[in-house]
Image 1 (cartoon, rainbow, N blue to C red):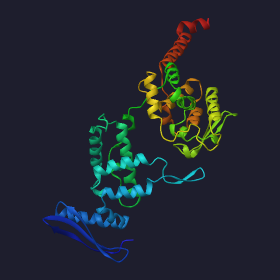
Image 2 (cartoon, rainbow, N blue to C red):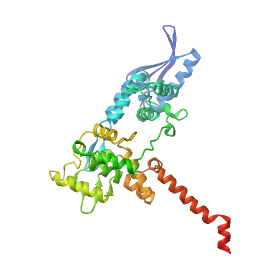
Image 3 (cartoon, rainbow, N blue to C red):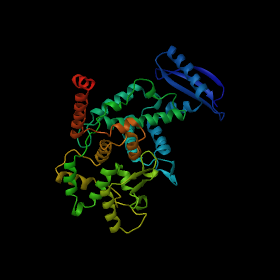
Image 4 (cartoon, rainbow, N blue to C red):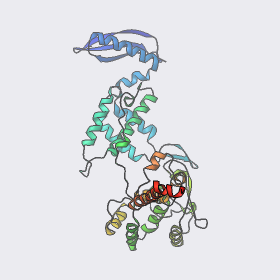
Length: 376
């Protein structure tokens, strides 16, 4: 708790007017707090405001007066962006994916590092957003709205952390219109056609043979890339044709069970026969990435604009086309929000034609003359 207020006035220093209050902190030390003012009247108003903040929020709000964003970012990194630690299947602290937020944080520090956190405004963040959208990527390509949104989400989390810690009264994200618009992001709707799938699997031979079982499992289960890479043989029941996705490998920290298609079972049986037969070993033996091999396979198969994650889009779309209820598909895919799940359900040419054909049938049955014939 802050000590008793002793004084309030303004001070002129180097020709500038500062609001000033003096108080005794919890340790008994006398401290001064000053803020730049526009005039003597403004200084008096600021002094009253500072006293109110000190009374309502304590001494931490005073410490934040001089805290630069760089210092706040370091405190946030130490508190929130550390590797996850588990107790069994339960995450007790840290994050599984912390490298990307750390990279976003470095960008934020480049822009806002020296700025005091109390002086960061909604307009400052809006300016940062516009500047980032105009800044090309390292490959000299146009920066996407989605990538800037990820940076803004980290900034929002950092400033929310500051408010929770008592260094800010309110995050500037809460003082104006929303700065993060998911609706403006370009959503991928790429799914693999059956012909493209056949061509892609056809080139997964010899040095790319390891891609075939991985792709078939991805296309027939809708599992995320990280879930596939971390899948162990102890998670696979070839007799019951089931895969157990452990909570510690999922994005939502919720485990689930997925059934396997016949072709997926065949591929995994072959892999198991060639493996060391160690239940704790990785099913696909991948510890890094398949980006290079996958990209080369797509080029050889003459498939454009297809990413590995699009296998998940394809799988979910096919499940819906097969007539599975959306809620069941969500349980299989591991989605917890319908709005997110809906982004993965894409319409291809065949589906669009099937919908039109179904509507033709409906309209032919329900047209006036048809209804009249039924009545007669």
